[in-house]
Length: 323
Image (cartoon, helix red, strand yellow):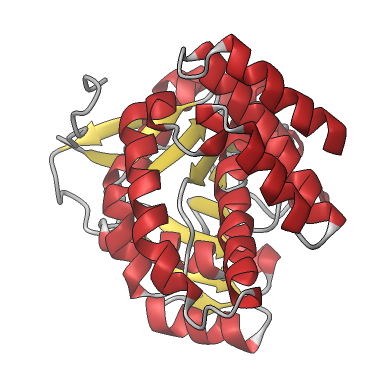
C-alpha cells in the first residue's frame, strides 16, 4: 500500500479468471499492460449519474462497457453520451453479459435489486459484482455470493453531474472499499484503474463511515443554502457572492487545520453575540439548528483549548435557555 499522501501506481493489468468462491485467493492475477485490450466486460444496472460515469471510467481504463440498464430518457441519453457502444438492456440481460457488474442504485433499493437478480439466477458464478452504495458493505450481496458471485463495495466519495466532467474529477477522488479479504487487491485495483485512490473500510464500519460523509456533505449544502436565505431576507441580492470567499476559506482552513481553524463568536465565547443571533433568527427549526451546531462547536473548541471554561459557561447558559 502507498504511504499517506502518495498516489498508488498500477504496474499490471487486471484480468478476471473464473474460479468458484472458495478459490477467491486465486481469482485475480496480473499480466503486462495491454496484453488484453478488453479485459472485463462491464455491465451497469443503474445508468444514473454514478453508474454511467463509472462504466465510462472503466471502459477508458481498458475494460469494455458492454451493457447498461437505463429506464428513464435522461438515463438513456447519459448512457449514449458516456458509453455509446454499450447496449441498453433489461437488468437480467445486463447481468448475464457482465464479467464485472456495477449496481449503481439508491441505498434502499439495492437489497431488492440483489434479491431480484438472485431469484432470476441472472449472475454467473465468478462474476465480480460491485455496488456503489456508501451505506452498505459487501454482505448486502450475499444472495448473489451464494451462487458464486464475487462481491465488493466501491463507493465513490464525490458528487456526480453525470457528465464528462466527472471523469476528470475521479482523478482526485477516493473510494470507500469493502470486500472479502481475498478480493481486496482486486477491488482496490479497479479503483486505481479509474484514477482514484482506494480507502479500506471494514464491513462493520460502513454505517459509521457513511454517516460521517453525509454529516459533512449533506449538511454543508443545507448550511450554505440557509445562510443564503438569511442574507436574502435582509436585502442582499447576491448572497453567494458574499458567502463564496468566506466559506471557501473556511472549508480550506478546516481541511488543513481541523479544530484549530474554528473561529467566530461561539469559539470566542461571545455569549452576547450568540444571544443577539438567536433573537433574530426567523424560524424555530433554524434556531434549533443554530443551537445544536453551536453546542457542538463549543464542545470542540473547549476540547481543543480554544475556548476558556469560564467563557464557555455563559455561552452554554444562553444556548440552554433557547433549547
